[in-house]
Amino acid sequence: MTEAIQLTEAILRYTLIICSISIGISLVLLLYRTFKGPTNPDRAVGLDTIGINLMALTGLVAIYLSTPYLNDVALLVGILGFLGTLATAKYVEKGVIIDRDMD
Figure (cartoon, rainbow, N blue to C red):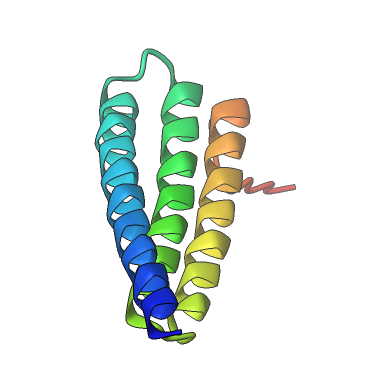
């Protein structure tokens, strides 16, 4: 039974390392897309995907540390990423984020 647990822990450790490296490479490529994107919608998609990758990285750290407390952080990053995406989409569409009608 202990051999199975050790094998499972080894598989989990290697999986976490591979996933962390993959997300790190993805974040570097997304930063490049965000700064050098040809259009503003490309930059917006890059920022949104960076938020999703940060959520995934937070989940991996929570698994590595065996703690459920980081799940709240992942949800907070998701909510902030969603609000940022909405603001960016409104800016790209209308040119302003907050409409001030002085009627």
